[in-house]
Structures are given as C-alpha cells and as structure tokens.
Length: 193
Ligand code: G4P
Image (cartoon, rainbow, N blue to C red; front, side, top):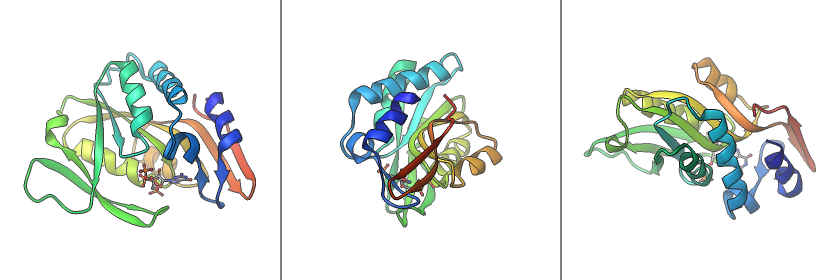
C-alpha cells in the first residue's frame, strides 16, 4: 500500500536494526484518515470471502481492525492482554511472550464472542516474530472456528513471523514489507497489496 509506505518514509523512525517507531500515526497518535484507507484496502482484498468477524490484539491493532470490520460489515473483537490466568469463566487463553518488548501476557478471548462456524480475519499493526498472531490463531482454533487470513500493516520481513505463520498454513497479507532497518535507513520490498 503506497500510501502507508509514504507515511513511513515521511514519519517513521528506525530506532535500531529491529525497531521502527511509528508513534505519530499508528502506536500513540493515530491518523484516522489513514486508518480509514487501510480499512478500505483490506476490505477490498477480503470482501466476499465469508469473513464473519475481524479479530485484533489490543491496543494498536484496534484502529485498523475497526475500519476493516466497518467496511466488511462484521463485528470486531479485541483479544485482551491479561496478566494472569482466568481460572473461572468461559474464556480461551494462551501465553504470549513478546521478543521485542520482553514481556509476557495471557491473550484472552471470551467464549461469547466466537462460534465454531466463524471465519476470522486477524488484523494487527506489526508482524515481527509472529508471536501475537500465532497466539490469536491458537485461540480461534481452540474455539473450533477457522482463520481466513492474517492482515498486517507493517511486516518486518527480516524477522521470522511470516515464515512461521505460513508454515502453520495461514495466509499472510501485508500492506508494507520492510526488509532492512538501520540508522536513518528504512528499506522496503514489494508488499502483498
Ligand atoms: P510478534 O508478535 O510478531 O512476535 O512481535 P513481538 O512479540 O516481537 O512484538 C510485540 C509487540 O511489539 C507488539 O506490540 C508489536 O506490535 C510491537 N512491535 C514489534 N516490532 C515493532 C516495531 O518495529 N515497532 C513498533 N513500534 N512496535 C513493534 P504490543 O505489545 O502488542 O503493543 P501495542 O502497541 O499493540 O499495545
């Protein structure tokens, strides 16, 4: 998606060889018009595929997931990051360890918001090692539902997330793919749409 690539060229900052800062339009301040266009682009790609819900992981995935769900005319469900296991209650949980942030949490989904006949589209902001998307997929499959695809805003293609998800049989669609980061360097490669 050229528009997102342009925005990253203008406002993105490579903090290191692995971390790209996009606080001014994705992670802290959010650009609503860009999010609307992202939702439109994903919806064009996924329309007519029988998707029943868009899932995302709190918090930065919420804006693009919402605009995508709005365009597809389906609900959006936020997978919560909880610090502890819920021992009572009807929930699905799986442990996620973030390599980028060095944190760990229980990704949590209420059983109320998923049915076995659901066909889920997962939308998230970054794809790094694929931890979060793999965890989200585990929860969906544990509930007996299926994943149609995984839509990503910014894939860091020098990390192993895509391979991990594709090896597990999931279709990954990234709006932007970054092949290299470094001081004052953000290198792009061809994205999926
Ligand atoms: P993975 O899910 O692909 O394995 O990613 P990883 O665990 O390594 O990263 C976890 C968190 O770090 C996620 O945010 C992810 O969006 C974020 N992240 C990964 N790489 C980058 C990057 O280059 N730049 C930025 N800005 N963030 C990155 P999170 O903990 O879920 O936080 P939130 O912002 O969604 O609340």
